[in-house]
Image (cartoon, rainbow, N blue to C red; front, side, top):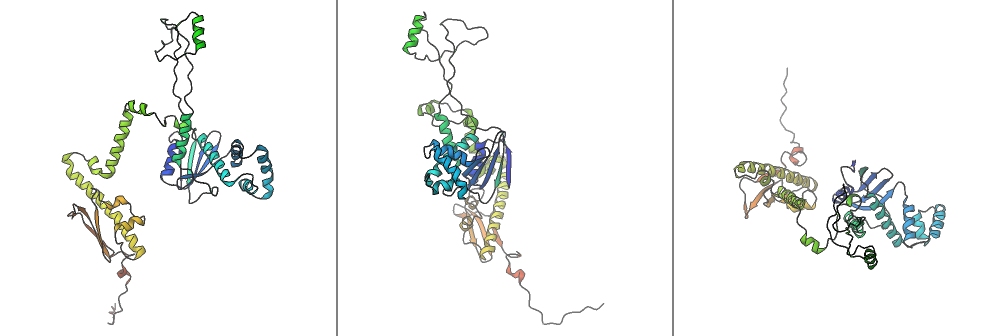
Length: 385
């Protein structure tokens, strides 16, 4: 199964996080204007990354030489010798003791991180994810969690510091602004070095100060709005923005919708009848899901499970399925060929909310359907036309 789209609608960090959250295994290809990059995922973690315009060996050579793990001459000699050995370059480097395998894997991790950092700057292109059962990657390579990758790149972008903004031209106090040019905005006075102060005095401009401003640089690509490690004083004085309030309200509303959907969809007192009808519909849907899971277990084991927790461990149900839509725990009582299910409130069963299911009449589960009646000893009745 393949999922595809464009980077105009979905940003790359969102795509990587989606694959990670769903613990997918497969390959994500991203095609830009000048290159195609393929990322291999194993259970939602990155295990390989390759570019069409740069082989793994080319990227690895830059890291090994740049990190001082090999000299350029040694790598050139190894690159010329390894084809005759029948080995891959990575195996050849380790076998001929050019570099230790842990150092090689560390260099490979750095090379992949830099390639992904370059990819995350893209804002134009197309992506496609091919889901599969397994992917190939270097043996011994420790997978890279997506959250760790995004955090490291964001930290590097933040550590790069703000880009300086060109200072405005000096303006003498009381001078009028030029036509078509906005008047300078008063700001903090920057301390001048002694040489600058002496130059101002010599020019007959004592006390002149140049107003300088520094604008915080935006990180390139999809991280232009991400900030890491804000100072404590800044966090304490920063007002809560409407967007933050809206996001918190949306999260609260989403959580309430999952727990008590009837209270969110039908909040008014005169809608009690509608709320009860919705609760019954949700309960019927939950009972159907539990019945399918219980009968699947009966088909596999020949009996109903001892408790609903067995169905959760088997992956047939989730923990949230063990409570009814009102949040009440469910009492489950199995029998040989049937079971009963009923929500409990304050230790007492809720009247009218119970259900009972059996295998009777089920072609796959009821053994009596396949029982052939004994042949009758009486003479058959023959009708003559």
